[in-house]
Length: 300
Image 1 (cartoon, rainbow, N blue to C red):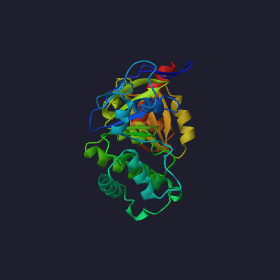
Image 2: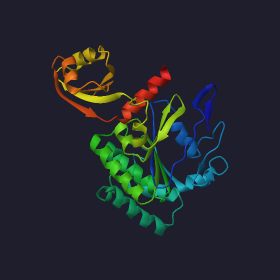
Image 3: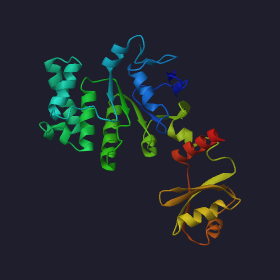
Image 4: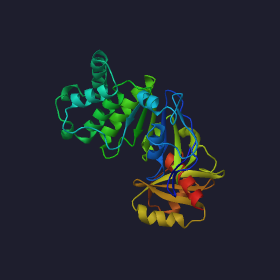
C-alpha cells in the first residue's frame, strides 16, 4: 500500500504480514512513514493505492469493524488530564460499548495488568510519563482487542519505564495478543519477534532480528567484527580508519566497533592503536550494524 499527501510520498508500496501472537516492530528514522502506516492499518487514513487487511477485515471497506477489534496507543498518550485514572479507563470502555458488567470486569483486568490499582483517583495530568504510559495502555486494552498498535510508546519516558512496558508487552503476546510497535530504539527492535526497516517511505527489509544479522552484506565473507575499549576513543577511531585492513570503525557507546579483514588478529588491532586498546574482543553484528549497512548502501 502507498499513501501520498499531495506530491509528497509518505508511504511507498509497503507490503508485510504480521503473524498472530507476535510482536512486530516497524523501525526507521523520523519521517520514514511508520506512523502513517499505523494510521492506515487502524482505518484512520485510506491508502492512496493498494489495500490492507487487519484481522481479516479490509481497512478501506470496513474501517469501523477494524476499529472495534484493535487497540491503539499513540506516542502522545491520548488521555484526559482532568479525569482520574479510573474515569479515563471507564470513559474508553463506554466508547467501545462495553456493558456495565463487562466494563467492571475489564477494568479490574487492566488495572491488575498495569498495576494502577492504587492510583484510581489520581488525575491523569498529575501522572509521571511512565504512569501515563501505563494508563494509555490500560485504555487501549479495555475492550480486549486481538491486535494492539503502539506508535513509539516509549518516546520521552525513562529507561526503567521503557523496560516495564516491554515486560507488559511480552505478557500480552504470551496471552495471544498480536502487537505492532513502531520504534527507533535498536534495543527495542531486538525484543521483537520480527521487524521491518523503513527508509525514505519504503520498507527496505524485514525478518527476524537473528536472520537480519546474518545477512552477507552486513559482515561480508572474509571479514569479522571486533569491539575495542580504549582510553582515547576519538583518537583511536581516527587511527583505525586509516588502516587498509579496517573496512569500517564507528563509536558504539564508549567503545569502538570495527569491521576488519578476517586475517587481522586482536594483537594487530592493539598495534594499530599504539597499545591504547584496553580490551579487544570479537563480537557478532548488531541490528544497528544491519541498518547502518543498509542505509549506506541506499545512499551510494
